[in-house]
Length: 137
Image (cartoon, rainbow, N blue to C red; front, side, top):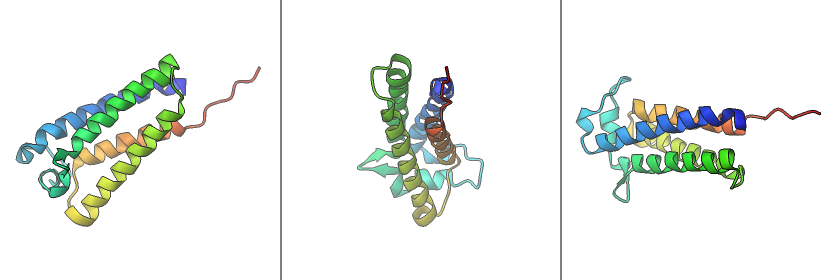
């Protein structure tokens, strides 16, 4: 997994920036820049944009920061099991797919930024589960 450290850091940082952007725009959905279909405002102003009054993007911020911490602890320092990175990736994909289902079945609109985040989460999961070459001596 060591060859994927840099790409995972880049993905997590990009996702963190997207989540921070969406957090700010949750409080002013009309100002969000949305390129595909213009559904971002609809998604961000829906009742599904918050869970227990907390913007969904805050959960994204926590997930991406947690990922950066896990990358550091598991892949760079080696102080925690690399299995935690797999749990992190699966949890992120599960939550992202839940949010996509909300967009499809309840909100009937799509947020470009949410799709970008889903892409980042999916790419992270692929990297985490990508088979590693075995060392032969």
